[in-house]
Image 1 (cartoon, helix red, strand yellow):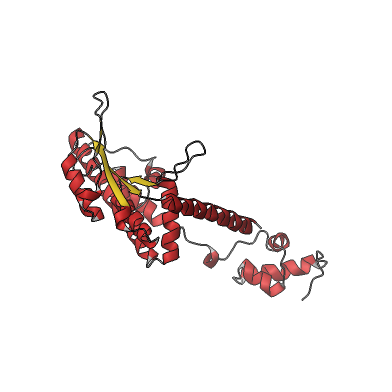
Image 2 (cartoon, rainbow, N blue to C red; image 1 turned 90 degrees about the vertical axis):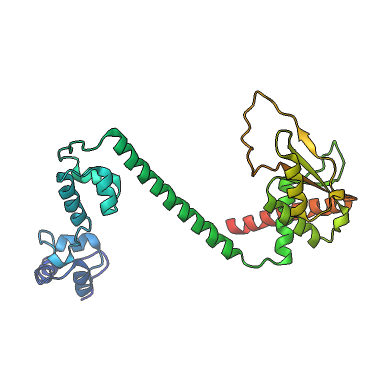
Length: 290
């Protein structure tokens, strides 16, 4: 049966057929396909007043949870207990049982605090496990790195953390400072990729005077695999008694400065490469916008 676009001249006849199909247990989609009625407004008018078949009504998935939550609440369970037992959100529990009487307190404040603390610790543990899984998956996704990829990473790393030439101070030095051992290792790998010989590198430890200076010097020397002769005199930061240091403890080893001797030409290559990356990024952005 074909219907002219926007015209349903035999509406009463169509309604009679639609009602018969509805009463026979057909869904709206089945009626639509059977009568070829693709206008939803017309389709709803044709079956107006006719209840939908029971089989088309989706069961409310949370009805069982709601009933169980109310049952537990009447037994004196707290919101936290119901939430943990049923695995649903606190807002859902509150919505389902808020009309029921509040159970009498059966615990001391100390016991309640201990239970809350254990629950919070469990949540923190789950969050940390999820955090670590995400990091590990991202780490594995990197895989092997090509020379070009390492080169581009190194240029960006240097331009973010390294010394830069200024119009008012033309030095063109290649100097890199960081406290993160992994950043130092990536930077050294990048310098090796560029063909910078190790005997052109000079290192300087910068650290707070109240820290373990000798330990930090040994740590950085071992990390970079350099003899102490490649290290300049350690720079000590004066202690301000009015400030409270947060960079303290055994893990604090200050910063390491790495300078490349005779690095003017290398600096120019780095700066040129960086602006090449900037230009390529702009072009890629323009292509994404069009």
